[in-house]
Length: 185
Image 1 (cartoon, rainbow, N blue to C red):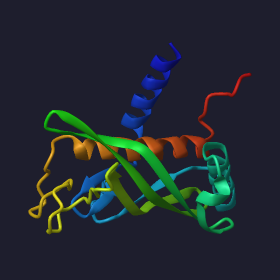
Image 2 (cartoon, rainbow, N blue to C red; image 1 turned 60 degrees about the vertical axis):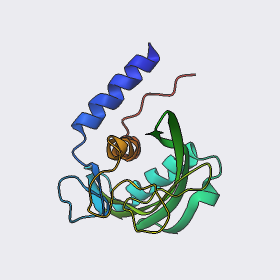
Image 3 (cartoon, one colour; image 1 turned 90 degrees about the horizontal axis):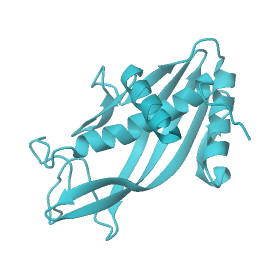
């Protein structure tokens, strides 16, 4: 029952979340403005310092070694942190499913009532360390999300990447807005 409620909440929040990423051959972009490589999260009633503090709390609560993932910070203004996601996405290749992991860096910039959220580095790879770039760049590498012409190579891969990053965006947004279920124990 709890899983059904959580799934419904995630689906509802994803649909209602106006700020979303879209995967393009040139990287993750704001779905509303493909010129921007970031989204702006409006959070009314909180100062830049409060939003920064909430982001630090989010990292402390969700990462095993928070001090290791934070790569840069300026209190109340800026926060950069790195995430590793095993089982990030799975790509069907013939008769097998190939799992890919990802390592990415998020940069948050804070102003009163809003947060600029940008993924500044993204490395996707499988268990044999075969990279998964967004666009094929040539050579012997056969994996990529888009070919040289900017056409999607495997249907659904872009959606899988978008769902992952938009889910994470929703998670941190809900945390900063205080929209979390009460921790009852």
